Figure 1 (cartoon, rainbow, N blue to C red):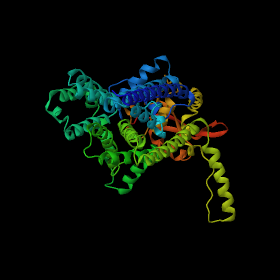
Figure 2: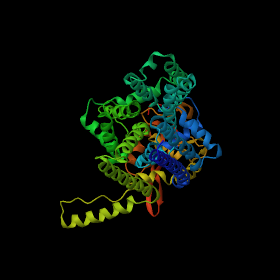
Figure 3: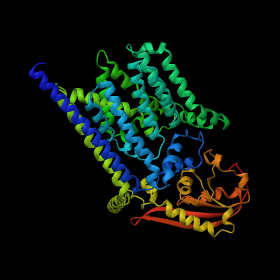
Figure 4: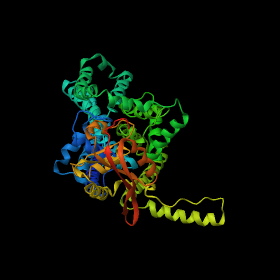
Length: 532
């Protein structure tokens, strides 16, 4: 080896060591920050619902498989404080980032790719919520990344052990979220199109892995069979709609730019184009594209007919971030005519994503929406006085700030419980709301002996937990948000003997601004009907 080659080798090793150190500092710092930050605000709508899952452990639930419940059940052995509830997701996020690094090294043997992929994930506003909140995405991301890493090592070594591990991890992904099925489709597409590893489709190992994954998932299938396949029917129902709608598709696509940051999502598109234009596409890039792009394509195309939530594509970002990072390293950090353009695009994406992410934390930590809205309303009133055609904004209502849903529920639960204690038969008085999510946010803070449920026509998890005939003759408290409360309260009058038409008021403030304005109606003599 010449002196120049030796110097170049030493520089490369130093460079790799630097990025390795940066990665571990990043993951360690983020984990500590999230553990400190996790207890600064209350549980969200879905988090409360999934925490209740952990109090009713089963192999399935109305809308999801059970892994999120198992996760919460383990971490809340130390207590049901918000920190313990979110400890599991923070742990899953940290491990997922570590697996992401090892996957990047398995594919590209470059610490820079693993580091920048991890950084990229932190520049997406919604990822900050997914990496802290008790959601099925937390265990799904962990099993998704672990499965991909196991597959790559299986095809490289040819040994049975990583293929068996692949099956077990794939089963874990299926038990985390039904999105795990997409993982199998992504890998099948990769093997079909890979000239290098297509031969594995003729071997027993991959199919044995599928069977092992199915065996791990089998308890959920049995649970669904015993409950009329309700979970699968509910999830398949998302695809139903009023026919094809270009508007819905464009809305689904626009949502991806919004929740992941416009320039960051744009980077994924541009990186994909750059990879596809390579002739031929190397096998590592093929693997990354097949395990990311189909997820985005599936849900955006599903948006043609049904309602698709933006974060459903989150699993695709774990390999997608590696794809973007790999192209940035090749194009932006290497000599070449397009390097400056890639660096500018990357810097712009980083700044935009960082600003949007900081705004997410700012809204969570401080009630910014109320004062900003009130200031905007003052301006609209002045404009209306000078130009009557300009309609002024309505007075601020607590519902205008979605972050308010994360605050005040312990106080609300205490006040509802105080009202229940004054009912003629407190022990036989249940609490209900119109929608399941509000019931869950209230129920997690009510005493364990207090029965809480949701009464509405649509089937939900409370139909499995609450027996209407078994509570015939009970009294009830109906908790509803201010607004159409009288109309909604009257809609439940037929399933009770009587009701008090005058509600009690509950108002909760957050730093001087109203966070919740609720009414509580008293009902007497539940008829035990399930046709509400």
